[in-house]
Image 1 (cartoon, rainbow over the protein chains, first blue to last red):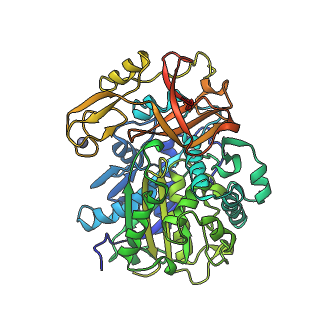
Image 2: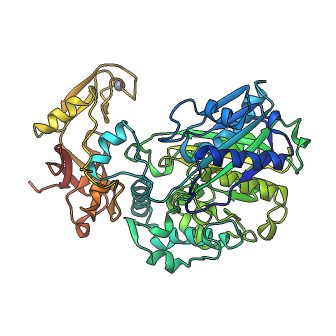
Image 3: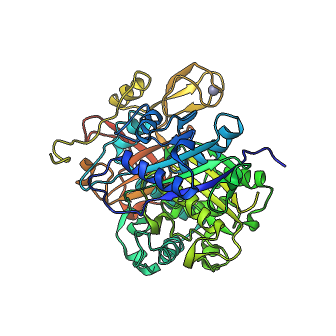
Length: 386
Length: 139
Ligand SMILES: [Zn+2]
């Protein structure tokens, strides 16, 4: 068996996404998420001796762990900022487990939150190569990057708009089973998705996540202490991570994107095959990233996600349950906390506490996170048993 | 304050390392770095070769030719100053020398196709001349 970080998830807390968060600070949303997670774990704040937080653009550029620790009133023996874009959430989980195994701490809170105020435009202070070589040409923001990725896939493999729209359709459909989802009560058919405005052609509005305010926190402890919590523990069975580039213009070939390393690595650590997975909790900021993730995971050949999505079903009762909480496309994306929603849903399902969307006999979940434009990728295998 | 007031098209944030690239664009030329040791071409500008990590990179004039890997027609611009100019097309060009770059395409949507041959066409629509690309002209 491959070497791997071992740990267990004993607590989760997630704020219900809202479009705008008037009168909140990021710190207050972080604290609220942590409060929910430690309540869920049934532990006190004083038992938390590790803290992993995300970067906060334009708000607390430096000393983020100390600022958050002070606000929470904790004195962690291990803390850090994890900065992997949408891969930050899953990236925190294995880092927490690794720190615990290294003897630095015993119980780590991993937390991400985002406020979203109406009319607020935080302009990035970046002075990096993207700001120098992309932005002056009229390309800024993730929409354009993921549109370029989608166009390339369509041209190289002949994939179609309708095939991509199916991915957004399933996200919306699954969100109808999750009262917390921002699009609960608002399903969308394939035709609705194709009829929504082109934002950055070939990407339609309904293939793009809705930015929301929200937050999520996860309590990680050792395998030995897994039964400390109030709920059935969930175990970290394997992890994989890979970064290949930052700017979309520097990305490797479509069939060599970094999930083609990180997902097999996580499966190898867990000693399982992709066919053993009961829940696919796959990062979905855009339809194009889901397409590439399905292909990189080996569920279908490169370029063939379209026939795959049209010949299978992806609800909680489907043959490939995928993003049963609605994914971020259906749930909403509270910035970096959106990536953690895929961890949280996996925990709900593996505990058997997913209510009306519960998968039968859910025991293994693949969770992915993706940052920048398929640049930073993390994959986790979470299990209901060690 | 309205965040859109006084926002102009964003100029490149030039660094001491990238200065020669932009100087040559001002003179109507595309120059790229080539590694003295492994001979690979490099973009964006650096002081170290990302292939072999050698630290002598030589500025050389590049052909200005390449082919179009992918593109997007922008309807909702990520930067407010660009919104007035929508729709417009950006794309990724793989240069003849090997590196890829993101650029603005001076091609009509109906004429764009995958792997089409393109050539550099320096434009001054904003505060600084920029290497845009257009359909390669027949010789
Ligand atoms: Zn070299």
